Length: 207
Ligand code: AP5
Ligand code: MG
Ligand code: ZN
Image 1: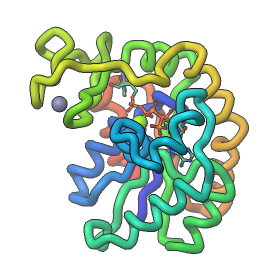
Image 2: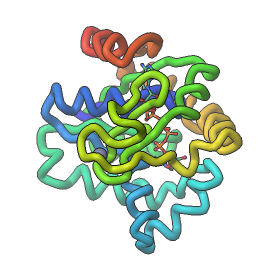
Image 3: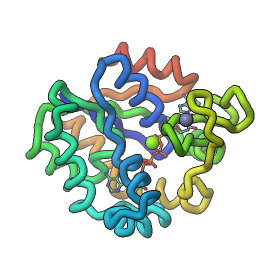
Image 4: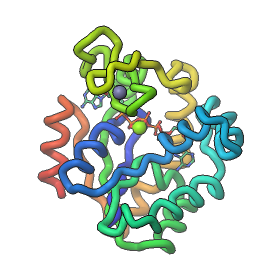
């Protein structure tokens, strides 16, 4: 089974995906993380993706579909996987159905005011990818990663004007895929209010 995490930027796809991955023992594939890694390394893929990401726009379908196809064919994913950040528009959802139709979407529903607050306070570990929030999920030691001690950073696209553009793009391009999966009976909605553990308990119950 391929689980798909859906929700606004900052809804908790990465956070919940990590917990679900540990519980089910299957990998989480985040197209955003893969693209950011490519940007950091300055690979040809990264160079192509950077401009769109910095503006909060979607990277081209060809690029992300290529990434996901390759990952899904790898041995790691033989028992299934969790997709975080893909599909992100109807053409990507249709393409995924052609690759593997055994999918189930989890829509984490959080209001817009809440995600803006969360994203402004988000910090990430550039070394191991751990996620923090200065308000709701702070590191033990002042802005250093609990797991590996690396100083935490803010994502380039977590600036207020880029956050607003990401939300606009989500409403226009990504939101329609909620109905795409709902109409096919392949979607569950989870209330994303409350603590990380409260949301995860709801998610487990919903599955
Ligand atoms: P991507 O990396 O996917 O970003 P996003 O969708 O904007 O989502 P985020 O990662 O910002 O949020 P999240 O839902 O993972 O929340 P998180 O768990 O971190 O994409 C980035 C860019 O890459 C795109 O703009 C696009 O350019 C490109 N891209 C990626 N995929 C693509 C695709 N398929 N096609 C085309 N382009 C693509 O949580 C947020 C914060 O809140 C954290 O600080 C966390 O600690 C905190 N938090 C989480 N849960 C809770 C809670 N319950 N209570 C309080 N705080 C919480
Ligand atoms: Mg994320
Ligand atoms: Zn770390």
